[in-house]
Picture 1 (spheres, rainbow, N blue to C red):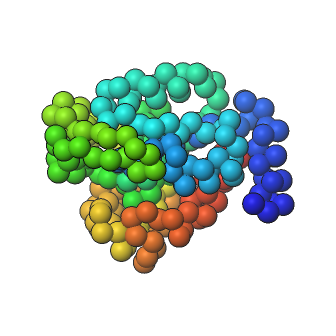
Picture 2 (cartoon, rainbow, N blue to C red):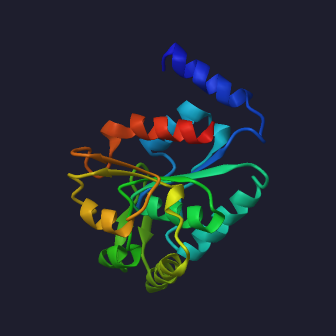
Length: 210
């Protein structure tokens, strides 16, 4: 971390709770709070300004947990961000609370995508936990997808980052799912992880939280 990074972090930490946007970050499927991207975000914006827990598989439990954490920051402006399945969650909460979001290679149909993992043990990355997708999890995602489809979608809240060489989620399908966004950054490379371009994501996030 260089001097400018330290100055940036100190400036964020000096902001009052009312001034600073609180960031809610959602990792991808089988990810965890120990991911490199979350650590980079905490280094940049300060750990007290980010909520990025290890997300439960069950969408009912996940939403209940995040809603409680959002209520803990009541009165403070918020920004949602996420990648892959976490990008879908960032979109969902963005529309629910009408707050801006940054989404990276987001899933657009998680109930269908998660079917391949149904009743199969999956090892979380960056830790040793094993998770399993149950039928009720698929159903819960389907219900929320329907809500997103039927709600008046506000594309002005969405900042979208995509990699054309993503082999997990077809970027063309994502573009079709998000016909209107506030900002679109389409990269020819970066793959699904998008790690090579993460500084661009943080720069955009920095602009939103100030």
